[in-house]
Length: 251
Length: 251
Image 1 (cartoon, chains in turn red, yellow):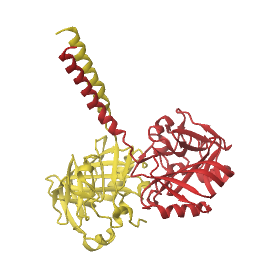
Image 2: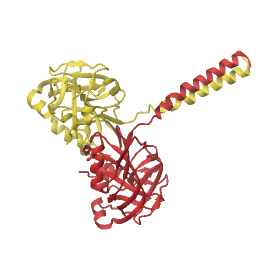
Image 3: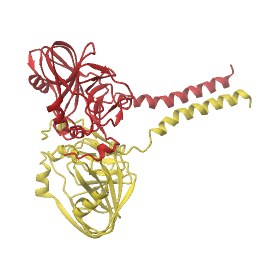
Image 4: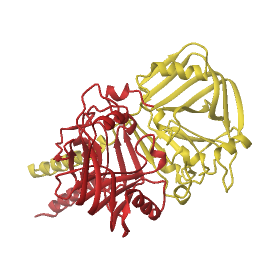
């Protein structure tokens, strides 16, 4: 090859590097929580599927939510999305399925809080609280292990006109009690000032290690808990471009 | 030139185009509101400068806020940032100056709501409300014109230990009454469900057309108002990486 050819190749390689580098920097881990719609809208009965899980997956591989028609509890873990329907069974979620509400992040464990003693759910919350450096930041939390007792719930799919969530819970929530169950709790602890847009405090969804069952955590007993925690520094709220959200009466 | 040279040049041009195109697409207008810290933290007296305006400018060219030590009212308009100090005078804000709270967006007018009649501030809010398609979305609003009467305020810089904002307003807020004044109101209308993280409803800061005075809008009289409005579909909350925010008692 002639010198000229080396110059051309050098120029080409430099161009590719200069173009690709900024792209890489945008993929730096962001410690960013993302929510689609608000818990207030969900509480008010805005259960229409207003975005696809294909879109939600762009925003995180870990989190919770629900599905169109309040059709069960959503759990996202390691990039896989599951729907725990009213029968308590976990089904895989397809990209083209839709959601009225989800909260996700790209989870990366920062630290582990260990609570050795046997604890109620309330006790565990207090024990983790004591280990957090601040009550004013959002945290993503993953708890893997064998749980002495978990009380979880789901709900069957609702039909329009949708009743508010308080009615659904009163009339048709289904409760499952799991004992010595192995699996993962996926969730968040959000500061009190999130209460008007999301759920403040702790909020977990559960899935068994065989990915066959789960639900929204109501209560439990915990022993030798390893809570893996990531502090989130940014929170993004995406609002539905959908008439049922825009016209809802939100209090 | 030989055919080979044309091939090399073609390859180089293609590479540049393929690399640059995605960059352009990321600069698509985002209709994204951004806030640094929370109004709750500000109310609680967290007035430390926790980020620079250089960083805030990355997130918007339009908006409002305050400065380190609650040192006056911030107005951002057309990419220029101004500080209206306790003397009512507008000073340019330098990039290296810091803020405890700001809310900004890259503003692009979508529509204009015209209210011809003479109105109080409260009346104007109701008149604009009637023209909005939804009460559940955030709006950025710019009102340029000559205002029959504006009552604006600022406050002098506070010293640590910082008193809560209610104390500052009670003890040292300075009120300016402007008549037949030409300038621009810069602000937002946020849904009620924003109340725990920001200010719900209307929130405006004012700057005169000569950029010499302004303040936080308390009241006014309006005539033939042209309110330029952009609907925001996303809202980003950036939380301060700063001990005074993390350790604050927020209710």
